[in-house]
Length: 185
Length: 445
Image (cartoon, rainbow over all chains, first blue to last red; front, top):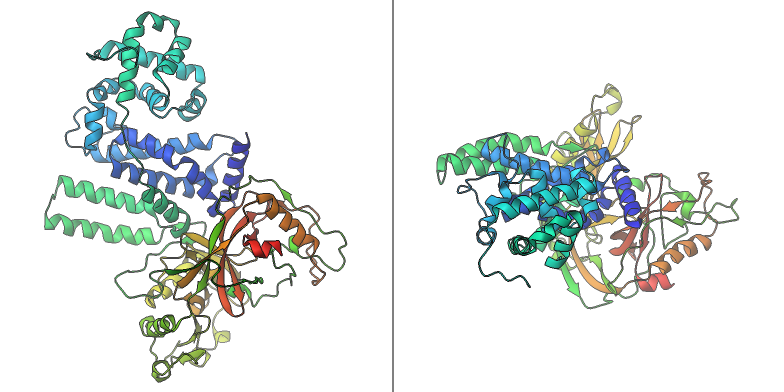
């Protein structure tokens, strides 16, 4: 609660033109926003560019922030839109929101280690709806609480849990069980 | 990272039927966890972006679009082709021009052409042993542009603000107003922080002198500059052409001041009073002047119109100085930096103050790390303030201070210029800021 109050105060200071106080907001969210973007681009340079874009947009539109609503959610929306704009510019199509929507990614610059690491799961996660995928990534990879996820995606916690559950059920059907994985790890 | 067991438990809580497929689910969760991409965020990027966002005000979103477009275009159409480069450059020019005019809250950023030699292009800080400057006895300063304006005479030298109600106690006031701190206490973990002093060494003086030729004025008599030695304090040279300027170099303070040469300017009283100059136009006039005279603005924040005098048709544009990624403030909370006066009738710059070489020496000093002590200082400075002002603007409400940010506070001590680490407090329902230096020996006194 203290943090929330503090955040409101920081936003209020920024809205009064004291943009030096944006630094604290930046420090609080830069890594989590970068992660969010990285999981949607798999490219370091692109993630850095879109993180820059997100925070510059945030500062230039800080006067539009409603202090009674989640700043984090607002920031995520900017990041999400930056990612969408990026891929739509890059792919010249309306139907691509992030790298998960691109089946044929041979022409995309993806960090090599990530491509290896994620393997076929990329296709499988790509079959989820964007909302389901975002929730899985935010919960399992970013380890955000359901409350945070709900704020970010603009749904109730119950709805987020339901979507998470559906996503897992879907993945359970399509993801082949790897040979040699022990159950006790 | 959440363990597999945590994730499974959570899933069972959401949907107990998952328990029937525990083995498959465990395998899936493990796979999900293993597939989490390993990456590390580049700390240098985080620092650089922070600095760019807060201090340089560069229009990154626009330049980003340019770069994206350039990259995409060159990838898809003109890969490795000189023609592609040429096309991309043609595309860059008009968009970059638009970017230069990007404005926000009456401020614009303007990137100086780095190809030219320019004053203050690189900040240089040389480090000395701890406490190298001895005791730094701090006294309050105000922005050069504001010095001509009558200001309340604060007796407090510890904490200062333009809000007279906070630090100045009028003769009629018997009970000093107290502060209410409503912010969050910052973490002050470092026992020492660097105090910076403007470099006034012979080498720095020579460099400043050499720079006068890069300023692009038509200065006819350069003899005095060539002959200048360590005993010379101030050098003044004049342009005699129409709308000429006087350039004054203060070699003790290591500053350059530019002002109009009244002898070569027209009588303004004969000019029409009306002007259509808005804030953006005024700021652009100021920035273009700096660019024309090779005064680099890379180490400054976005330009802002800080004052406008409709009677005299003059306006002041401020470029806040940034040293080592830290904003610099006067003790009264106003930003310290280059001040440019613009005559809005003539649409010309009439004076520039605060131009420096940006070479500093730094020395670590012990700083206060107990935030409670700092708050006590605010109260103590207020309580010990003696009656020295007759200001009538004593507020009836108790000032509320918010969460402070860190910065450097500008002081002149024995004619030497210092930049001292401090905290900058916002004042609720006000545009004012309160500055508190963190030097331990000063605070203890």
